[in-house]
Structures are given as C-alpha cells and as structure tokens.
Length: 185
Image (tube, rainbow, N blue to C red; front, top):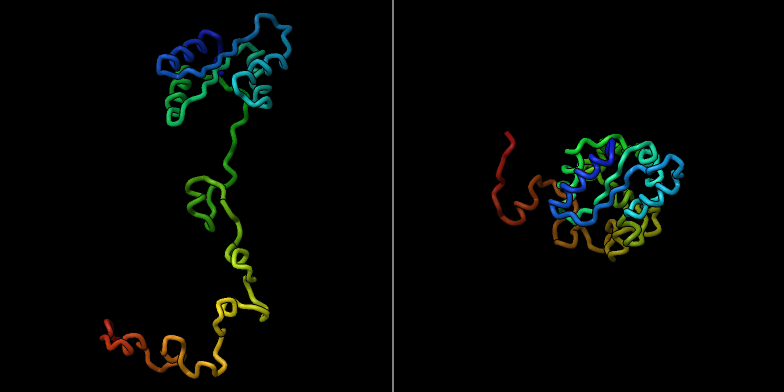
C-alpha cells in the first residue's frame, strides 16, 4: 500500500524492470461514491483473498494505492525489497504474531518457527497397536514373542547366553576377553 498512485506506479515499474510479470495495481477511485465492496472486488481480481481485500479496500478508498505481485519461487525476497524501497504505508492488515517463542519439548520446530507435525507423546503405540503403559494384558515383549521376565523357561541366562544377574562389573569385556579401559581406584 502506497500513499498515492504515483508511488505505486514507480514500484510496479521497478518490479517489471526486474522481470516480474504478474503485477496488479489498484489506484484510488476517481469519485468518492464508489463503495468499498466494489474496490474490494477489484482487489480480489489480483489474487487477494476477499477478507484481506476488504481490509485493503478501506485504504484504497481513503486515497492510497495498492500493488500486488506474484513472485516466482525463489524471487519473493527481491519483490519484497523492491516494494519496501518505495516507502509503503500501513495497509491496515494486522500482522500475525508468532504463537509462541520457544517450546523446550520441540526445540527444532521452535527454532524454525514451524508448527509441530504431530503432538503425540507416544505415536508408536498407536502405530504398533499396543498401549503405552501396559496393564498386564499385553506388553511389547509379548507382541514380539519374547517373555517380559523369565519364569524359568530360559534358566538363568538370557537369549544371548549372558546371565540376567551378575556380580561382574564388566560382563561384556569379561565375556569377550577384552581389557577394561578404565579402572576405579
């Protein structure tokens, strides 16, 4: 939105010089009796959503001029820079505030200011069809066909042949015959 039609024309011309083709300019009407709804309809022809066009139409009815441009992918920043260099005025469209600044539970989404794709603390439970906390009816181990705790089926050794309980502080190193890298003093 620009203060007058002349400034809007300069901004549109610079956009054309930089290769932008889909530029739409709406100047203030010649007479004061043009309804705001008619101005909004004209603005909507420039690919602006009607609720936003109604807001912009109030500024155009007050004597301002509007320039819209549809920039090809990757050229939006250039279009914004050109439009900003011509001294735009307040359009009346409220600026969206970010919903939140930071969420410790979703640091990457917060850093990128993007909404969470899924806000479920245990999505795999639904995918696998098992409850997150079992009530004894069915556990993840049972779904895999493994016992939760041994009841004597495997004796005192687990599936890998290592004992379930051990007094040895380095069972893996001892089983593989490897030296321990650090010793407590």
